[in-house]
Length: 278
Ligand SMILES: [Zn+2]
Image (cartoon, rainbow, N blue to C red; front, side, top):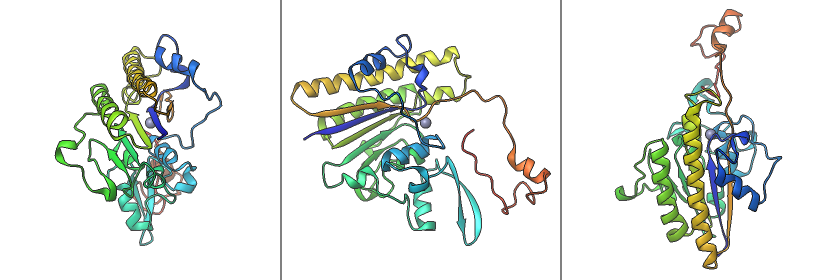
């Protein structure tokens, strides 16, 4: 069977891909089809992009439109963190659906299936398959079809760091590439995003996570090469969901709205502010 493997290096900016920082990605891009005009969706947040990768749709269509979102419940605006494990389950209860369009996991459920390993926020991981058609592995809980929880021995016990990405990649290669062989395997690394949240762009602290994430990609490339040599047809795609920028100031929109007389108080529900970043 022909199958597809997708690796996402979360938070990898295009200009971080250089011969010095990510030699394996550079080598891969020279052999592969490289999409220089590729742009992510807006807003370019992990949870939103996860849902867009899963559905092939822009945020307005799949409805996961921010890292946090406001849902109206009984006419009252309620802010939610879309990264929480139960967000899309809650959204289904309130609006009648988790995502508004089918995911790849649903489309592939009868033709080889999908398995997702993700080391970002639970909300982003579960956006790949909120209705339980395939398998999603995440440290906050792993689920199989019909969202049946994985057996205890099968849980993904990792931290959202470089060591966690390494352990997850080992499992992905063994269980998805060599054993399960689903039509779609997704490996979504938490770095270089996780490290970059704490440092300005270009900081020396970047170099190790870039190097490590590049090595994770190489490990998958090598496994795919082995499988191809044995006759398997595998489409390997490597990409990122967004880059980062250095924030030097945070604008307190709630405070400014109240000061301008447009909102009753910072905690009032007449106008609710929904942040898309940190
Ligand atoms: Zn991200």
